[in-house]
Image 1 (spheres, protein in one colour):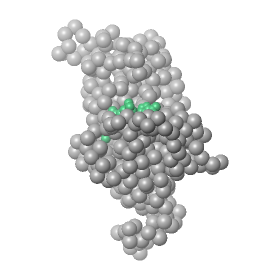
Image 2 (image 1 turned 30 degrees about the vertical axis):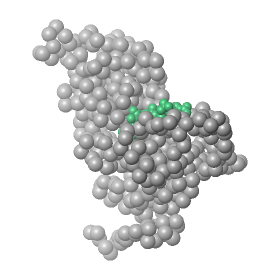
Image 3 (image 1 turned 90 degrees about the vertical axis):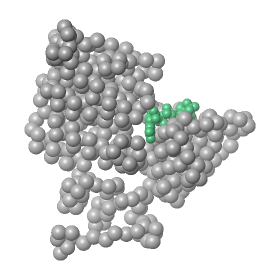
Image 4 (image 1 turned 180 degrees about the vertical axis):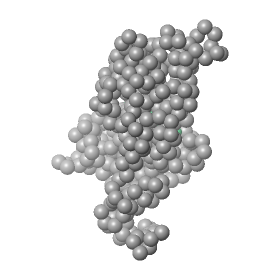
Length: 391
Ligand code: NAP
């Protein structure tokens, strides 16, 4: 502390002070309390810590706005418009700008996409274990070194006019020679009765957002992929009594996660499906689970249901631009991330596949390099380049 006369700090071990943990609703660590009025979850970069200490407010948006103000207004005519500020879009921004293309990133939701909601990322090379939000803050700061990220700029419409793409947002219309769609994917709903009724009242799609509310209580996680097992481990570490319910007799998640689930003693019900989510007039109290092997259905009391049954692509813009989609609605791309439409590229979860952060980052870079090749006429592209090339 530079000024102990102004600021005093204390580090509290919650296992030894459960009363304090209870009083301040501490469900994961680090949990920083700035006096009684403001709290922050997760590891914070020093700059953000200091701003929150002074303002007693969440500073992530504020710092983003400060960075944007320092950069000045975003250009409305660019070579490449990148839609989506997840790992694919941010990586593309870095590569596009470094190639010499003018670019802008347009984002309607929070920066960082789905990764920002991932409690812990353990397979992004260079980071043995990092909160998803923190990883994306680092990536966004890197991308801002090169280009503008316009937030609150959901692209509502996209059309090609006179060889340029016009993207309409509430922050203005952006005109670009090429477009990269990195709009990601959204959670798939389970489709069970009670799911919509209790959403936000026990039904959740985000363990890192809501998990701490169920410390010392019971939760079920539905699904058998990497997300389900990552969520179950996170909940277990928060002190939530967790059971995974999976419709098959084996997980599709990677072996490392399966081993961790077994080691942590997390309950698993294989061959089982949640057929209904039930509750009282306020919140979830149980799920009805069908055991497909035994052919029976029974009630399992629970306080929360975390649904992790995969994703559906955010393909509205892709459809507007009449891109070719695969059977699951993901955008079809070639190895250089070119779509069926010249000068339109797609990268990240929107293209389906393995949906890893590292592949999204890679696809973003490939898409930006393809845009560079198609828009310019690099000397190594015989007869290529120019606006008409692209597929
Ligand atoms: P996923 O791999 O598609 O798994 C979805 C799971 O939900 C599957 O086990 C599936 O069962 C089950 N499921 C689907 N519909 C269901 C329904 N209606 N009722 C019950 N169960 C249903 O999805 P994900 O786990 O969200 O992962 C998506 C992608 O992100 C994957 O490529 C994954 O590798 C990646 N990811 C990676 C990490 C990591 O590397 N640590 C973390 C999170 C996500 P079936 O098995 O029977 O199909």
